[in-house]
Amino acid sequence: MLLGMLSYSLTCLGPGKRVGLWVRGCKRNCPGCISPTFQKYDSQYDVEVGELLSKIIGKSPSDLRITISGGEPFDQKDLLPLLKCLRENGFYDILVYTGYRFEELYADPQKRECLSYIDVLIDGPYIQELNDNHALRGSSNQRIIFLNEGLAEEYKPQIEGERKFQLEQVENGTFNFYGIPPKGLDFKTINEDLK
Ligand code: SF4
Image (cartoon, rainbow, N blue to C red):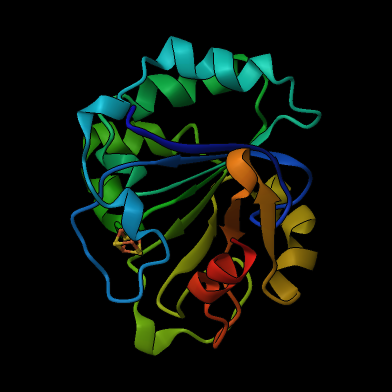
């Protein structure tokens, strides 16, 4: 898994206090992509699934929920074993962002198997012109698909609310930005202002 970033206190991309995992590598190059630094496939960031799981579990998240984004999670060679391990370790709310459409994933046997371990899928590439300021997703072509209908009520307040984002201070006094920026907010400027 090409690891981009881990957060253990994510509250803006799904309900509860959850783990946030961003992977590296995406070929789409969508204009306005919020994560351009995670588009590059760079093997120096490759982490074994077991090691990654230890990092996640070792932090003992209070709520066994996780949001996986990127980059493109479905282009990772070991997405399936990671999802299986998360399930085996009790994660009951697995939200995955992808640039693929659900139908494309379903047509591919291995990607379809991944879907069976995912609770909520937010699908489709980001299209800048279709940014409608909706919570949880970047543009109106993207769908919030409940593969586990049992979680729909818990997601409802966030889906019906405003876009949320977080700034988390990390090493060297710098900040990580999490979430989807409200339309018109220049998150790059925010980061510059905080330096
Ligand atoms: S699919 Fe997502 S990560 Fe990939 S370029 Fe588009 S917005 Fe960025």
